[in-house]
Image 1 (cartoon, rainbow, N blue to C red):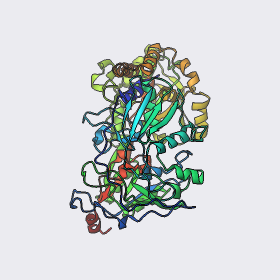
Image 2: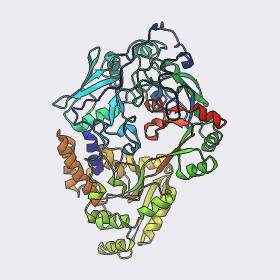
Image 3: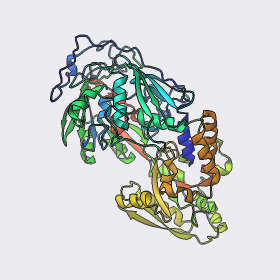
Image 4: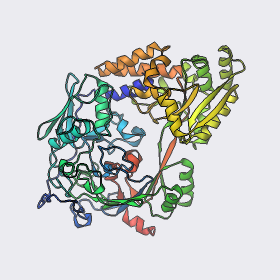
Length: 617
């Protein structure tokens, strides 16, 4: 188990103290008049050009800070589109997230950005509120949901008035609970002709749901194989983002693994795909959702989103400099700073892409001795790393001091002894090594993959540790060999590199957290943690309790215990910068997700046409 098993899994758990009921959005729009379902054809018809449809355009008079309709939002992706059917796996562009929707979605529209700083939106706990009082999750295709008292089923009330894109088989008709049942049956192999899970299915240790049934046109019930807060969390985390599509399209073609087969319900519709060049989506004129901040405005605002496929980063940077790209993500902080010098109007949005850390063989000397582990952490100057290596963007505090309020012990509440274990103190580190029987230090090795963007950081850590007498041999491995070495054979000999989510320690959450930080297979996990029965006990209890308050208590206890044990050496969260042009309004970096293609995040972006024109673009 783990601090994150606790600090995040459990954190996540509250996810659903769940007898959670998500609130619906603003009024559901009336179904468009004069709309007919197109006859099935070999290929779907092209979507209606959004410029031909003007409802809501004058709902609010445009102004400096008031959203405007129209325009094209041009963004990039570095990867080619290899798959389009979300059930088949291997999707590299996330394009379906622009055109598809889920039962529920993260509440990015209402929750302040400082409360959403996880690196992956699907890891955000659902059903709990941040200090702002706003829930993490909000309804989408489900108007609300409720977990049964015995924690073994979830009942979804399905939103009425949502229509599939007016293209292809099933296009234009109203979506209902039977469509969601079809998607889940195809994904898990639960019926409707599907007997095996889809390629993209993500199993949990408890297995798939027992059943997923539409009990009537507007009610969908999922029955779980066990009563567990953790399982409920995983069900929401992994399956609320199953994209809903028209079953007629799959029945006609066998799959929807082409851009022109995506008959979904989202804010945009795919208009064109040119391999190696671009993907173009256009505004869905029948989209059901309205802007939370401007309730009279139907989303989305932009007429078109063009996703340019640009593998070369220098080419993408040039496109931003010349105004040909409205947004560029995943920049290192130095590149973003340099871009700001040449284009002063550029807006920099910082988030974090993970925390590099060093895992150790906890069952072998010298790392089985906490004095050695603590010495290695004391030798690392977290504030110096934050201020120099990462440009002053991270806080300089221990990154495992962040997480979901209520489920972690905040840094401010740590006992001074635990805080002292993360303060830069090379002389104290030397004393600890001497006490542990290593007055002259020791030699060891650190293995890291070539794909790691932190090779320079490994050299800095080597230098920090050399100052306390620890001689670290850096061993660079090709990515495939490293993955086999660390995650398949469990062959970690001494120290190994890992990177975790930026906010919660371990980020990914779930029972696999500690397996990953140790670079070990699950079947050798207990061997490596055999000296830490308290943590195992806390983890087991946290996974099995059905009481949310108990989960919170166990999580806080386990979180603090793990912080005190130094099972990995932490550095600082890695800043990821996304830059946008000054005319791009309401961009929210933490809501972009899936390579910037999160549909319900893009849907409220708008383009200040007057400013763009004034700037000669």
